[in-house]
Length: 318
Image (cartoon, rainbow, N blue to C red):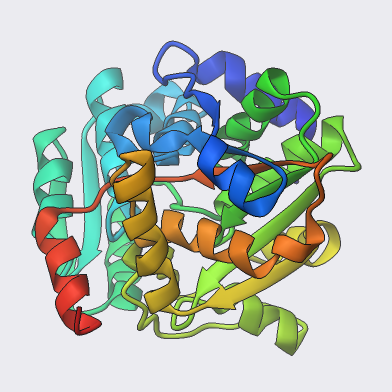
């Protein structure tokens, strides 16, 4: 379903449209943890997150007739912007279905790239709306479960090993599982000894729940980390994580927010809670890393507003 060759093909296909983001060693974290820690800065990707990689790849593999019909997708944020950007660059119409209550900055950014936005009462109903548009002739593109979406996301994993062949560990946050599936395919396909660790927040922990159940399950997301709030995961992503990921940690929103504060104050990066969760996971896993290890935190996105950050502080009583 997804192979290293597919990820490599995606890398060539999307190269004209995406940035090769930097991989930087962070001396403060390295000193604190007693191991070499690096940040893969996907928040500097086009539209502010890794999602542009998979969205563009998924659209580029459509045939000409499918592109002309326009594409429709579902997203509460980052995939919406990635798909809308891809449509603008490729000259095709895009419709995005969102849940009511999606933060204004996500909605405005999506519209700024040219997409039409349609709201539904919940994310589950947004998926139903997208399928209705598909029935009208629009080509459906998936926010995380399609193999070509995963292949595009996996190109970030290729870049990690190209820039840091000595990588021993990578921590990746999990929403629907499309990012970690692509990254683990790339990393394990080239260097099987690399350990990949997943992390979710409480209330956006569909993968951890699925692993406990022994099969993919559905849930209603409640976490403040909206970009991790997938209501389900695919069978393939479930199997990839079950078979190739060391462990999936579940952390609190408060832990993720504390890490967001560290990124802001010490690394001068404005990050999402999804990114904060990777540092929180590294803190939990600190005893598993030694002085000879090379740990990469995948800084997956930075699409957070000042209003979001202020609301988080108020939520946690800070």
